[in-house]
Length: 112
Image 1 (cartoon, rainbow, N blue to C red):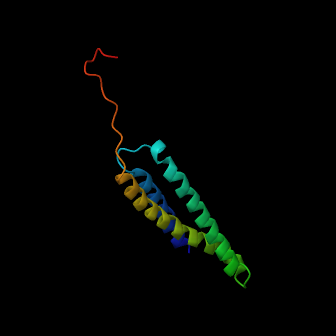
Image 2 (cartoon, helix red, strand yellow):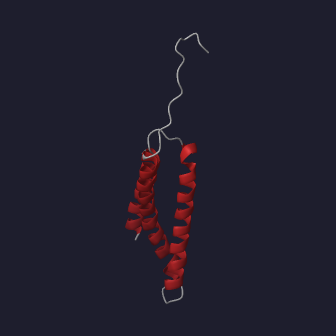
């Protein structure tokens, strides 16, 4: 179990880094905020649901001391899965939107 957590924690960090690093071109965080906040809320609800599920299934039996560990295992597998799904949905949504044009530079260096 310790080996599982030693592998999953850096793997989850890599998934978060990849999710933030490979965002659609031509977008800023401000334009993606309407998508990123609901993704964060879904992540939190899913991990909370995994903890509640593990408490309801394991928390009342003879192995009731293990429900937080099992909930953490469920959450650690659920979190990257939702990030991959959200990244694919995000790329599908933002690939069809018109790209923001960069600010136009002045024609002459003396123009303000």
